[in-house]
Structure formats: C-alpha cells, structure tokens
Length: 97
Image (cartoon, rainbow, N blue to C red; front, top):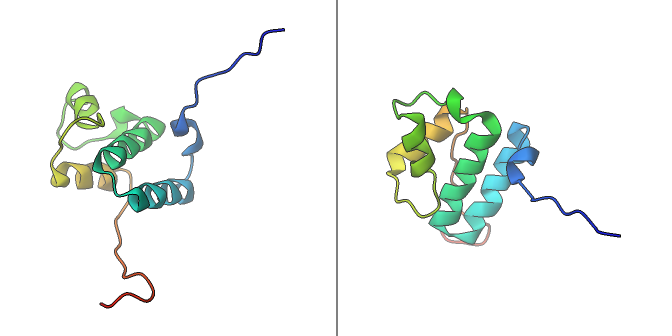
C-alpha cells in the first residue's frame, strides 16, 4: 500500500493574527533575514497577495517576497502594515538596556 504525502504549506495554518504573530516571533529568533522575507511571503499568501495595496504590482510583490531577494525594509513594513501586523521590540530578561 502506497502512502500519499502532501506538500506542507505553512500558509494553510496562518489563519489568525495570533498564529501569525507566533510564527513571526519564532522566525525572528532564528536571525535569518531570508527566512523572515520568506515568512512574510507565507503570510501574504495566507492572507491573499491581491489584498496588498502598497503600490507594487502583484508580480513584483512575488519577486520581492522571494527568500533570495533583497527588499527594502520600508517595503517589508508596508506589507506587514497592509495586513495589520506591527513590530514590537523588547530587551530580553537579564540583558542590560
């Protein structure tokens, strides 16, 4: 009997703001910018690329959110803002501020 394995797509699990925030926080802990860009692409896919209105054509947006791209920080903030996602910073416990 053959076992059917489907391709895992994290975008299918990013169905609410809390899950998205947890996903981004976990990605940020890795400290890998290409992984962060890919994660923002996953969120855009989950929420719908066509819903992003940041004055970038949809085809260019796909290229921008490619893990190998080097998008401007401003663009990433615009994409996150378009989905109601904001960034917050904190000092880890025990670290000097």
